[in-house]
Amino acid sequence: MSVFTDLVVELGRLLEPVLAESATAAAIVLFTVLVRLALYPLGRAAFRAATPAAGCLPMLLQLPVFYLMYQSFSSGGELLGHRLFAAPLGARWTGALEEGGPFGAQGLVFLGLFAAIAVVAAWSAVRGRRAAAAAPVPVAVPVAGKGGGAQPALSAEQVEAMRKVGGVLPLLSFGTLITAAVVPLAAGLYLLTTTAWSVGERAWLQHRKDGAARSSL
Image (cartoon, rainbow, N blue to C red):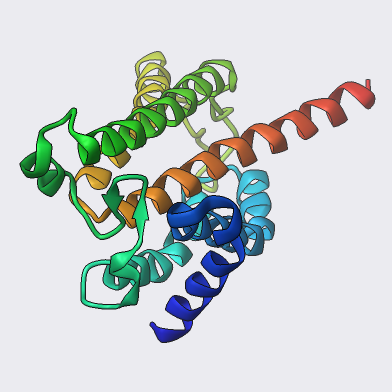
């Protein structure tokens, strides 16, 4: 954990002349971007594979980083004294409510965080539902089996069920709001940054894919 703390502290010191007391918060965002840059090849491979299992791999690899972030701002340490505007980076939403309510100095910082996460989640949901509606659902073509029979194609009900599931799954991105409400503010910043990166990364990869398809016509 000390390596992680030292890295965030050093990044914060570099940004302090410009961002003052919010430099450590910006350092967390920058650290998250560096992590996602390192994982970009996996994200690109997961996009090309277009399977849920492949898409989960970059997220699973981030769990140790998120755990370190959570522990660093939950237990005693030098990072606990840093703030994002009026809110300590180790503060939680419940603590902000006790300090001054949802519209108090700390509460407004959390409301801003929640609003940003909601925007990113809505963007993710809209893109996901459009992709689910536009993508063709693979339907098995009857072929001769070993016993001389045929493998039945998917029924219309099965196809419709798969489309409904594809439309609901993007809504799970709003679960990030619940997580951000119970973890320290620093961890919430990490969640916001990595979620925004994931949505932007997929949008960029889809744009490149569509561009390559148009150029090949």
